[in-house]
Image (cartoon, rainbow, N blue to C red; front, side, top):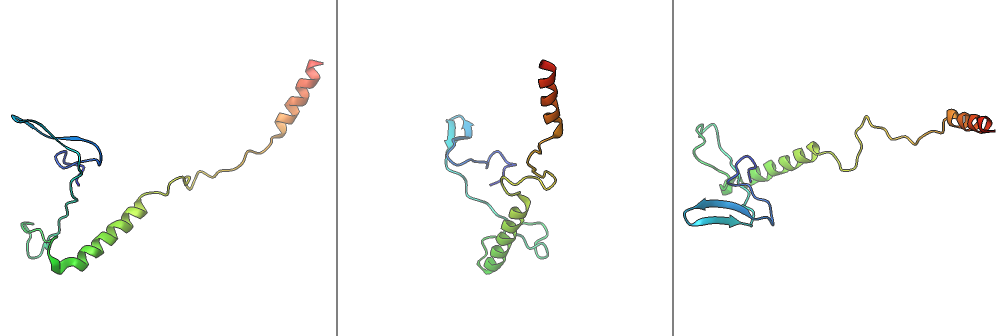
Length: 109
């Protein structure tokens, strides 16, 4: 799926307007299949022949998908983990609060 092209973008379980012409609006609710492209730029510099479905390149496709999965895992931060510079410390009781409480008691009497 490409989120740059509104014609191919879908969200599972949500109806999307696929076409609106003379026959009326046409909706789709099933997500489109993922589309992949793989070109041999040495033999095909104009990218005219998509070799993604080539059975001889199965190992390469597996390797590329693994690399993509690892890159995604490194790019997305862990959920509920604070930023490295935001250290969480419990609040420390301050002496000022005890002194202020004593002053308030003395000034009220």
